[in-house]
Length: 130
Image (tube, rainbow, N blue to C red; front, side):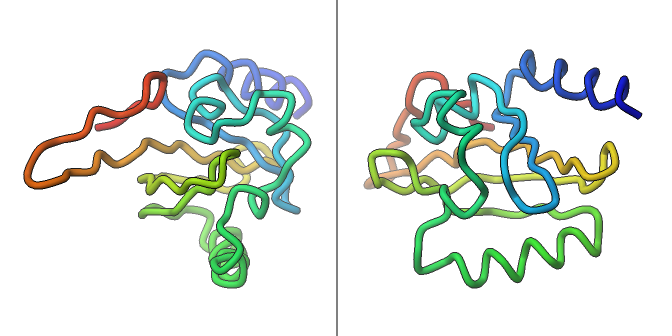
């Protein structure tokens, strides 16, 4: 299993979209540069944080409920609001799979493009969108 975890963590580094791998307690154990761009935190900073550190404070309660449901269901997708390092919020689409390797849970995210007066706003450089 240790070899599987190492392969997973290495693959995360090279993925083109934001990938965050968390342990069962929600602490990040691996992230890539796209995740850093999405959150505004450096990779080392993210590795000292948890899911709750990038969740806007008013949403932490519902976030914890979603986390428990995710671990039970093993798969989840939808939208989630990310609180960036500078305090701004970005809405992202996500797909998450629990226990890809036992105790490691993977989320892939992409920022949702916003529009103002019918015009698309280009995403911040380094943030992948679809």
